[in-house]
Length: 190
Image: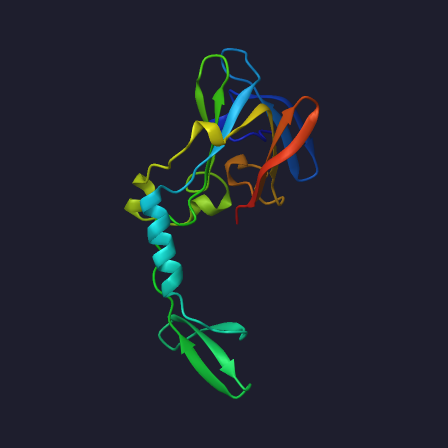
């Protein structure tokens, strides 16, 4: 049974499976097992756009937000006032790059870059439709922001994806540096 996603298969070693989880370590094609691991971040301009978006979100106070679907199949949101009245709330569209998360590992020896996780392409959420803008978005990385060490990955599969390891439902990426294993990134992908 195949349990490692295709895009990581040539880098995976020391593979073990338990129940609905597969755990493996990464090794570069040059044989090196030490990497600088980076997560994408926003540029100054993107941070400004996110700030403007967050300022434009409706103020709901301490009210819970409820959702519904109207007769035409459109989703809507509302808050309840005094438990009797509905006040409809309209959310602006977020910038297209919000929510895109990419993790890459750069080999310490040969500087080969491995995309370890891109939520647009990997995991169960990757089967949803994405816009052309999202697909073409190039994430930004700063070399100094990463963590160094050996990379250990844990992929969760909820049993239905046994034959399709690309559609994992959860991912954890650990950095093992000097016998200290720390979680670098963790996410549900469904």
